[in-house]
Length: 283
Image (cartoon, rainbow, N blue to C red; front, top):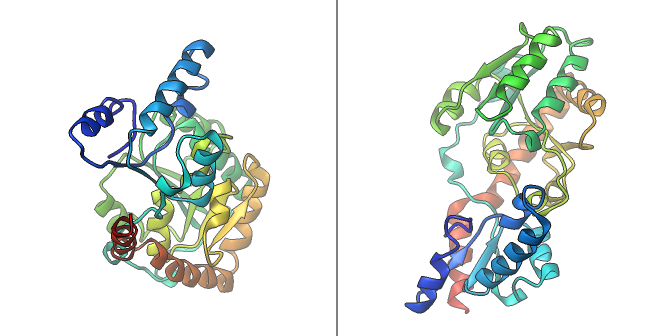
């Protein structure tokens, strides 16, 4: 089950009827930290810790996420299951770099402040000084959409930035993965548990063989085979430099694409379900 403020009461019921529970998700209190009174935050943290102790196991997607739970003393080590974010990688279409127009970039996902899409636009504006034909697709919806459109107008980027409303995963994969060579994941460091959660968009990008540029949040350092180009969080200048250096180097593009496909196997749902069954069978 998904750990969230809407499901906090369910572990109590499931415990009473003796049903084992495996939960996953981010800590509720990390999202609430800056939004509630400090006294209420402490109470919520206490309650969340109690709820965690009702779960039979908690599934995490990264070593850092596991270490965070141990440091907070939410759960003992033997009740934390480290299973990567998983998808059916066979469903994701693959398109060779040569099939896609050069100097094309894509962001897809929520348009919220912590995702850093505003920083991406500032970096893209700098990139256009050297690559004036570059194109950026921004796919998704969220509270920052109008603000992002304002940035595009202010910086005169309308000819190079294309906004697309939220779409299904299948439409994204088959209709839009053909339009951009490089995936952008410009997330901003939050200094909480969200920094330890691997975004599923990265796994989809790897499975598609997409070269990917991501900001250097802690969880990105755990990705095997070095399939992504990391750049410091919060720096539009360094982001622009990374975009230019990768987009203009066909050899590097091919290397990152091949590394992505090789890495994607680690996130194959068929493989990781077997791991989960094996772990539970030994408990």
